[in-house]
Length: 434
Image (tube, rainbow, N blue to C red; front, side, top):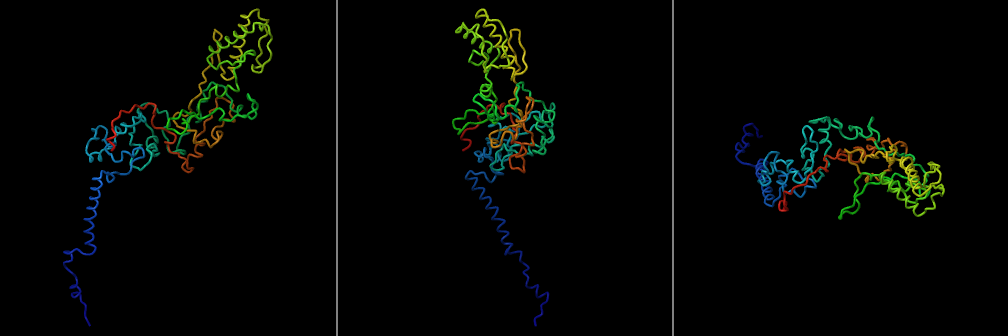
């Protein structure tokens, strides 16, 4: 029987194992040499082919994809540093994408000059996040400042504490409790115009919102496939929207309507048409007037003795027609007026707001599938002073994280006033992007 002792077992151990690499240790050594070598070879091959993907933190946005292999086009250094566009590749990789680089192509107005501190371009528009749109910034970029907004001078005209829509957003200023009434001086009753069975020029009809309110459109460009809309509703104009139901007839014997123009132009038109009429019908000086529906029957002419001549008839007729226009026809919509010493009426400007929410951007076109009454309570509005804009609760019906429709800040707010943009001075050639 063999006896196994510690001494005999120890003789089986190779005391010089560390001198020879074998097993896992051999593989560890080989891999620690081969992997870095392969990585360096891969980088060298890509560099030789002109590719810079190994150095890039990620793909750039869709709009800037053409510069993805030209890092130095954007990475020109921090503000105050010399322009590094012509520097070596290594310098471009280390440089920051400065505001100066952005302004080379987009000479946009500042976001907010009185903010403390004013944000730089890259603070909100962050690159190397894939093929995304840079304008679609994260809410965090806005809330970082607008969560506790501070300015360098004056009190801000907007809410100083706000967060993501809808829960953390302030009520819209147009409909906020205590907000101003509609400043328009045009007398208008939406409820009356939306009643069924109105008497129109062609018989009984029922008006809809779209009868008067249509999205404003501009001529499409040569390459466009259809009309381009601004998103806002086109201004309501008398000739396009009101004239067919509210004509400006001023005299039973004149078939033409007075122009919707300045009072001086209206006066000249009325006097001219009456002079032309009596010149062609001199025997009508003493002819009595017949009731005519085109002229309001509840505004009768003054009872006067027959005119002695054409000039007296013209003076009387002109004065009576002007009184009908100033005090009845025009006053029906324009309300307050004053009569000057020359007898001309002066009305206040209509002062209809072109845009109730100037700090927000809205496009009616994508909302065309929703009825107007869903957002605007026009059917029950009887006063001009009513502000018929929707509140944020109405918008949050669809625009909320849980509802699916886009609800981030950029959806409604624009960061730059592009009407104040400056022309860009070209700084590149096509050779720079080859």
